[in-house]
Image (cartoon, rainbow, N blue to C red):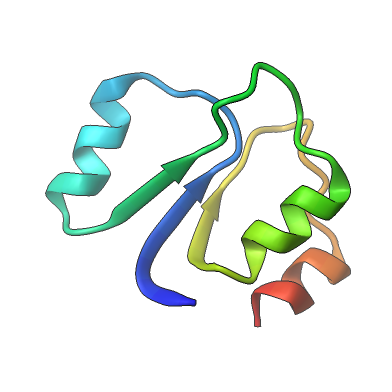
Length: 68
């Protein structure tokens, strides 16, 4: 896990990405026009210091444990 990386679960405006990169974060964003599958979300949770999610994303105990 990189201490300076952020994963964004859905497409957001470029201005939001620019704010994060301007603050020194490496940003990876889900490029797909669909909700992540649970396995995909668990995998990404373990790779990044933070997740920016949307309402439909299920952030539960398993995701939080994968991020630890």
